[in-house]
Length: 351
Image 1 (tube, rainbow, N blue to C red):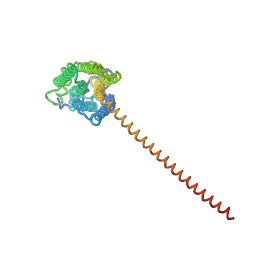
Image 2: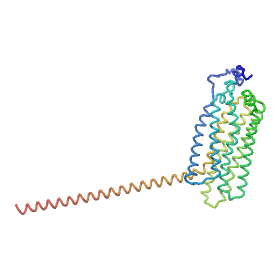
Image 3: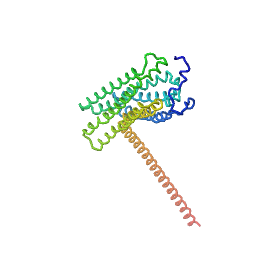
Image 4: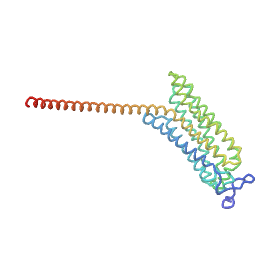
């Protein structure tokens, strides 16, 4: 069956009435992934660079959240790269009737499974980075320590279990082409995998809200000016962007569970997931941004003051030189006048 060319040349889905399959130049949603990756990947790199600069050259201190952030950075970049690879291999982003069964290659199916399985660990590293940061800042509060440890364990167990569940539901024991294709299109993978996806989205939202609210009581219990408390709360409240992204992923996960055109409708979900990962990673780097800003501002102010001082010294030196030159000219003029006076006086007495 695997060696029968006719099977692999068949459309992967049944087109709507009146629609003719277009294998040569179909409509695709690949550009949506391209644009989201082109925006989000540089943002991840830029924010990671700011955090690295703050930690390595300004604060000069390392902690466990730096390791988690590094793993989150690798995970975020890997997820975006995997998604780009999947959509550029031909099937995803098209309507199911606009590509052949043979376009669902072994490589494509494996990458798709890897993307689904690794999503949980990737997003967990980002959440752990924030939890470890809270532990570093507010570790003296016993209640917060317990909540941080509980959050890390609970999220870790959940994402590990979902990764295993995807492997059990959708990954076959035999890695032949036909076995892979049968596994991902099986009732077990489709009927149980889609509800699992919605559960993951709901858990993401709940954990994001947990992380958003966790540090706020600790911040307001600190002995500091109210204005500074508001500023610190605003930094941590940037996690609202991740919460909004989580809400959107639930919406698109629900739509995908009801879709009959999976490879077309999954693209918006991947776009929102890329945004969700990017927003979450940016939140982990936000506490470093004021440090970089104030440090850079001080450096620029120092450089500006030094340059201004040099310019003033140069202007003062030029003015002094001008005064000296003027004095010398005046002295020469006086000497000249005296000489002329002597000549005139001598002529007057001897004529």
